[in-house]
Amino acid sequence: MTMRYRFLVVNVLAALALMPCISQAVGENTVPYTNTFESYAEGYLITNAPGWHSDNSYTFASISNETDHGLISPYLPQATPHTKVLNLSGTISNVFSANTQNYVYIDMLVFSEGMDHPQNLPDGCQIVAYVNTNSHLVFLHSVFTGVEYVFRWATNDVDTVQTGQWNRLTFTMAYRESPSYFDAYFSVQVNGGSPFSDPNYGYGQPADNDIIDGCPWFLTANSASYSFGTTNGFFSGLIIDGIARLDDMVISDVEPPTGAATTTTNGTPIPWLAAYYPAVDPDVADWSDTDGDGMFAWQEYQAGTIPTDPASVFRITTVGSDWSITWLGRTNEENINYRVYRGTSMMDGGAWTIVTNVVRSPSGVNLWTDGEKDALSPGAYFYKIVAPAAP
Picture (cartoon, rainbow, N blue to C red):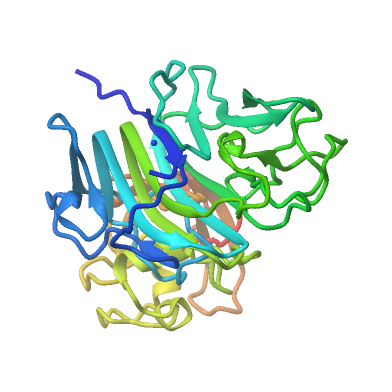
């Protein structure tokens, strides 16, 4: 049986649907809020954590182990590990004390598959967002026709969401930038890209009253509920509904940092380092040799060995009488082929010639035999294996 992931998020108190909303309830969490789920044990029920609730008996939301998915939220320290995720089936809410900041940013990592159009939406939702069966992010907003506010669904068919993979969703809520003072706006980004725009429904800036070209801002779905002259809304929670996996949830009143590094200066992926050295500065971890095998962590990544295992070291283990060579080293994210060199001297300044490139073995044991041995001139020959940083 294959598990099908789908999600709906509703901004306030979301198929997976994400839904931010407006609510007068006093919650148990406050903005800014961060949850990487790393501090919980496997199997922990998230509804036991402060601020998380579910009124549905069929809901199951627990922490599960997850192989590092490689995505990094720019809000989090780059050494943050990604070994735990929230596994959801059902409906949960995360309620907040009302936040009255001008801007609130909702940033999270989501793994889901497409779903059909959601039905029976809760009242007071500012946004409803979901991924449809065509791998497009769809979200509910409103449009002022000059006479009344009407609901509209906008489909982000420019940046398709990769279903069955992890994606980063960012919602920017602008609550107090409208000159009419009773409209609230939001914008949507996928994987840190440019905000989605739509000339049919979008507004150039929250302060614009007219739909114009450019159009990265949308009226919240509950704009019609505001009374003229009153404050135009605030963030008070999320509802998440469906079957999905979630990670690195951040609710902030500070704009997401840009240009966050994904590798160290040596080219080592920071999520890879974080898996072995959680909560350690990546530049410090990169130059560590905690297993004492004589290789720094960045060299172990390049070689395809494990930086915390002294038995996992890049070295030749056997040389056979048939001119075969066996060495240790496995695949990594780049999987650049090993290079085999042949020379007539062990000196580094000697004449070394590239003989071949060898595809890395997932098992960690690599074998190659020199098929040119019978054509070589008599004499002594030496071999070295290199794990290059680039092809």
